[in-house]
Amino acid sequence: MTEPANLSNIDKVLTILETISDHSDGISLSELAKITLIPKTTVFRILESLKAREYVLYDMLNESYSLDIKSLELGIKGLMNVNLVEVSIPYLKTLSSKTNETCFLGVYNQGHVIYLYKNEGTMSIQTNARLGSRIPAYCTGIGKALLAYQPLEEIERVLSQKLEKITEKTVFDRVQLYNILADIRLNGYAFDNEENEEGLTCIAKPVFNYTNSIVGAISVAGPTHRMSHKIDSVIFELQNICNTISRRLGYIGTK
Image 1 (cartoon, one colour):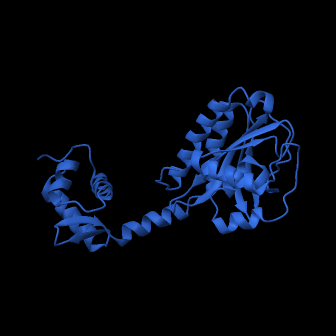
Image 2 (image 1 turned 120 degrees about the vertical axis):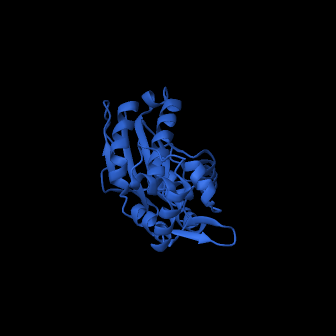
Image 3 (image 1 turned 90 degrees about the vertical axis):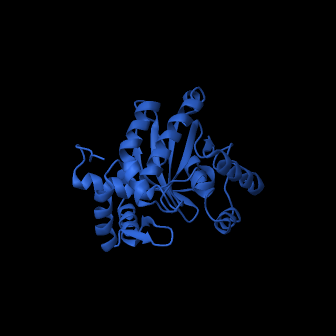
């Protein structure tokens, strides 16, 4: 077998590591050589170096290779250095451009949503959602998207408190809210149908990280008369953006 001419030594190392990572049960030397198209002698030499540095583990019983602790440490350190806001900003700008509406990024904090970033679309709106402000989670789309994925004890704590009726359409009945949160987990997105501000409709979706934990949520907000005509398209764009950000943060689930 001839080594691929366009692969540098670093490319070969990375190709081998990536191939091993795709085989959680381990992969043999022969299989690695066959999949990567790198000669077996070259693969073996690289594996020996990786094994010595604890990036690869060799199972003598099964004669297979798998990732060792150093590879896992590098991956985790890299993910921990990923900043939610920095990753999200370019995608929120894209989302605003595609929907022509204002988009928000928020995180959960003790029953409230804290807004970390806002990008105004071509048809900007006036809203009481200010960067750094805390708004109750139960009456906003982004807040409900965050609350729905909290532990049951936290949901019960929040919903057991006195919930105010902010607008005529605010849902503050606990049983109804439990059902709404269950629907959010089932469908993957949340609505705010003028529940926090009259005339304003919001659609939100959660963002997850490499631990399969919710780390934030993104929303698209606009006047009800505009949003009502493009709900499906907004949901489509929002899902694509949130799924992409979640993948950037290391999430590999299916929520």
